[in-house]
Image 1 (tube, rainbow, N blue to C red):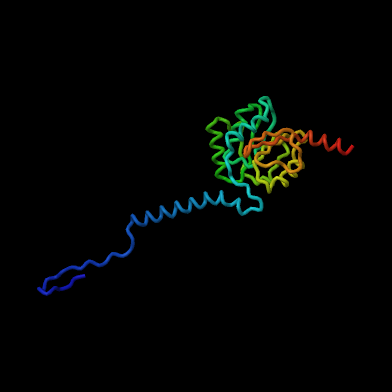
Image 2 (cartoon, rainbow, N blue to C red):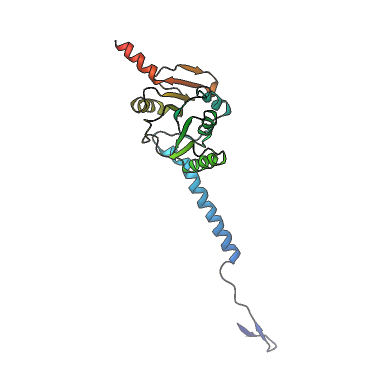
Amino acid sequence: MEILNDGGQKSVQKAPRNGMSTGGKILIAATGGVGIGLSIVCASFVAPAFRKICLPYVPATTEQIQNVLSFLPKNATGKLLDIGSGDGRIVLAAAQHTKGLKTDGVELNPWLVYYSRLAALRHGATRQASFYRRDLWKFNIKDYNFVVIFGVEQMMKDLEHKLIAECPHNTKIIACRFKLPNLEPERTIEDGVNTVWFYDLNKQTQRQVSGNS
């Protein structure tokens, strides 16, 4: 815009600049994208808290893994399932410990499933170890000879009913942190928070038959 000063000379007054700089727009867009990404990732970890029974992600300790492996014979065959497999460390440890065992993990959190699959690839165990993103209550467990449970106290009663109803009669169950409420363990490793209970459904059935005769 041109205006005249007192000396009759023209001077130019720049119009004020409106809007935001390109750099500012990029910064806001990047910040928003990061925020949305974090919200999506965090939602997978927070969502279980809104379920009737919450199964939070708590990584297994080295002691818990060793206690679980102590109940797996090195010459065992068949299939093993880790319920609530988290980052896959139990499944992969079992695969390395017992080469003749097909090991699977079922986990609802997609990011933990992706991480577990990458870990299996990194350890060269993709043929022996598999991971499934499923609701454990809808997952078919009828073909598993070994079942590992890292559960919470509120779920153990319902899970016990599912195991008895669906698992083969010779299935071995390894419960960590919380015991099954009614089945009698064959062996127990007392180790504080790392305590592990070992159950044999075949022997449980034999006891029931003997008790009813």
